[in-house]
Image (cartoon, rainbow, N blue to C red; front, side):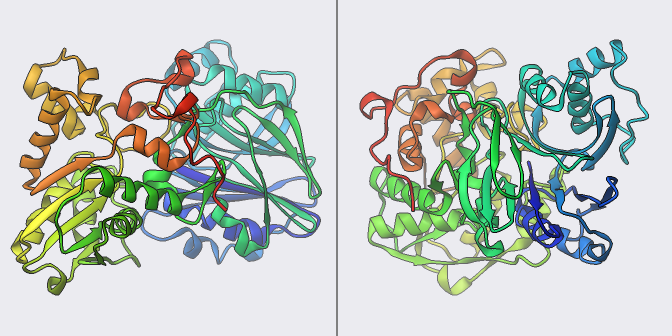
Length: 492
């Protein structure tokens, strides 16, 4: 995935930039980078590999060398960033977050038109997405025109922070608003972040979320809209289910409160007799608290996560490493497991490998029954819009492996997304048996949409439904009147 932070200030911005960027560390483990505009109009930039050491540890010794009033920082799970580019539009520093699904097509077009040269070097020796975006911007008459052009050309998503050598600072949210950008303000400074949790401890007050496709220029005093936001939005629902930080809010909907509501919905729709409700840390914990409250059962922590050294298990690219991280970071508490019937809440099931091993561990420690409740619907379609998954094939998904085994390569996938169909029920039963669970139930899309509280047509649910309402212009209809969910008041 990845996340970024940018600050423009009347005074030195480095401290706010450093800690603001660090608050995005849960979104990636590949590279971390910062760039600051110096008083002489040049950029000071540093990039570190953070695969084995946290961003904060790698950069705290660099801070003395940084000084300036405008800066950008990034946690990148794609290419090394920020890039400093010299173009016909002048020199600028840039960071990006997203997934460019048509990157090879864009590279070919740029090379063919002599718009990109390989001397735009990255430390990886490869032409990465941020370099491609920079080249697209440089083909236009101005930076703002370039950012608009990126929206037109990129398939997938691409949000951008950019500062030029004159100190002008731009923030551009991706065309459909699949990832967020949030603005904050304090006396003499403005900040742009993806995670709103970065704001309060740095003394910033929330200003607003950028709209889909919106481009703004930030100064220490204000934000100025340069490209009006689009009316249609398709923000990723999985932000609230899994990878968003609990203290953050997007479009006014808080992650932690949404997860409580998700757990509550699971308890209402799929109740079961149990001695305690439990969460698979970290994101499953919030869902389990909501489940326990609604079901009137105790909340317990039979798995405790060891956090100081282990990354999030979806980050490593190697499957064996992912499994090793997942198995090592969760430590069982036998006294809360033995002879008990436990309901576990988890955010999702992708391959099923981790959950199967956790179930086996529970039974080995004397668990009587293991009931699993998943906070989102079954993942049936690999995401093609943002870069949050390491899956290289649709058959990494346990759902797709079942469908291929059941019907072959050319199956009708859509029927497996209908929770009332026999095909869906057979798939869930297969997963339950495969993972050796007592019972298994997934959240329904309607209940998840209701828990988030945004109109359904503003949310991307592609990985569960296979339908991209932003691109097709179709309307998603939920049972709520007029497509609006009753929890329409923003979380406070």
